[in-house]
Image (tube, rainbow, N blue to C red):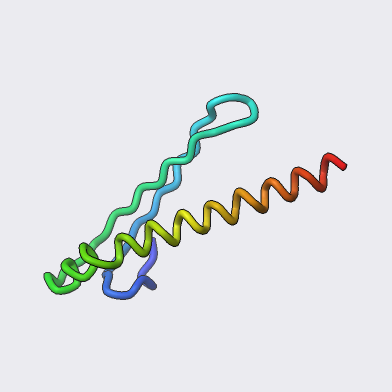
Length: 76
């Protein structure tokens, strides 16, 4: 739970990892907003959702790159 995202009252983020094989897993991200103001709801619907999805994808890409780099260092 966070209260630091602008124009929101509370945002809940849930990350669920499900194993697929011994070397892979599935990541499911769920985001739930609590917004009391109609104006804030409109702002979130129009702008913030796209930005949050984009930022989450960028973060996951960077995490994946870090994991690949660490695996490369460990296998040398």
